[in-house]
Amino acid sequence: MVYGAAGDAISTRATIVYDYQGNTLLQESSPDGNTTTGLGNGADTVFTEDALINFSVSTQDSSAVVVLSGQAAVVTSFTLRNDGNAVQDFLLGAFNASANPFGAPPDSIDTLLPLNVFVESGTTPGYQLAEDTAVFVDELMPGSSAIVYIIANLPAANAGAVAAVTLVAQVAQGGSAGEGLAITNDNNGNTSPAGNYSNGATVVAAGTAVDIADSAALETVFNDPAGLSVEDTDSSGVVQDVAANGQHADSSAYEVQGSPVSINKTVTVIDTLGGSDPHPGAILRYRLDVSVAGSVSVNNLVISDTIPLNTTYVPGSIVLNSVAQTDAPFTMDGVDHAQFNGSDVIVDLSQAGSISVVPGTTYTISFDVTID
Amino acid sequence: MNMKTKITKGFFSAVLMLFTASVFAEDAPVRLTNAAMKQVISINDKGDREVSFVEPKTVIPGDVILYTIEFENISDHAISNIVLNDPVPNNSIYRDGSAKGENTQVLFSVDGEYFAEADKLFVTENGRQRPATAKDYRVIRWVVKTPLQPGEKRQVSFKTRIKKPGE
Image (cartoon, rainbow over the protein chains, first blue to last red):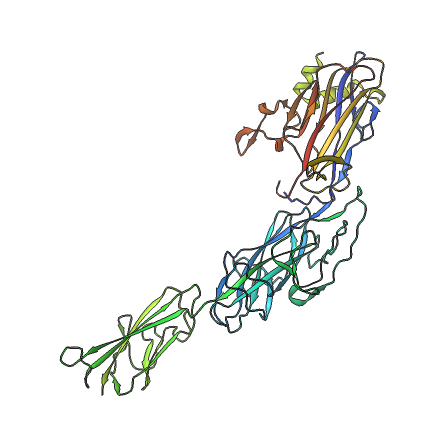
């Protein structure tokens, strides 16, 4: 059932049946008192359901989204729900000036660029560059929700740096396809602050207060809740998300994690006599344990290790995860990821960028040198 | 003819029968008024909750509306076998337990035809029968137990809540 009750006439008419002087009579009600019998001689008791504007923005992230220093197109997710009684459009804006909604560590990056908002508008869940291109929420039914993403590029930053972001939704006129005009005042003296929406394409001035006497006609009533996030930083600095202003906001955050790649290097001495004495001619077997932690896949993961001074590489000694490698340049055949270039052992775990190394993966690399 | 039996059988059949019985509008011995007021709850200076009722000029989902139906005998003769019906308005949900009326029996209907006490009504949903709840009521009926004397004025009432999205 499509529910869009704003402007509806809500009406009822009572009926009474009774015996009077031997006759059974029927009579309808009216708001002022009907004194005529018979069907159709009463009048409805009726009033208008006013337009309630009520909606909320809430982040879908339960903790800061873990990102890498300098990572591009990082995504925070929000739900926008229309709790009013009319179909509405919603303008969307993102900014980067809020506190970390998840507590520690404190927000430290306020320079995200670009900082864009896109609405889930394709068939594939999650943000996709190609599919999710809408910059405002169009024709959101009462009781329905839309998913909104903030997309940003992280600058280079140290581990633990936090960029908090806030999504602000501003109610706009619904009823026809396309971006509706912002509704910046109701009929009870409430106004919306100014804002910048649709990734900079739509600039909305602050509303002008209109307070009309309550009437039987259709009125607009702002009843959006207050929130914890800042909502407006245009003119007067940071302003807390206030109730009944046609806007609602919520925050999420990106947190830069430390390097997700760890390398543990050990060496074993294999002397010519079968002992472990590092004399000339003994073999040093180096072992590199590489692991990827965290929640983000790693691209272009290449491990290089320079042969120590006063040693000589043992040709053909590179082993990756128990698979012998050649010294020749990579063949990208899914087997041979390693080479020796005369000075360095190089292992390309991403195979020339063709695979992402997912968190939780471990690699074991070993190679041998002899002591000169 | 037993009017009471007819009415409890079906409101619409009773209406049809009466329509044929009194085709022409005539001055009625009763004045029937149906007034809607919005309930407003406020906190007074002492911090107490105060309930008041105002004209329903600004009404939004979640608001509670009080309907008061007043019936006054403006004739010189008693009126008997009184039965009042009022449909639950569109966009509205009956508030459980709110139908009031002294010396009346309150009945409900989920289909506009069969009326019964609240705990004796059922609805069929997805092929299974379940007890009806306030959300299911479409018509409220008051069967008035005593005659209304000349000049006497009585009232019955009920409350609704304006539906929210998804209701």
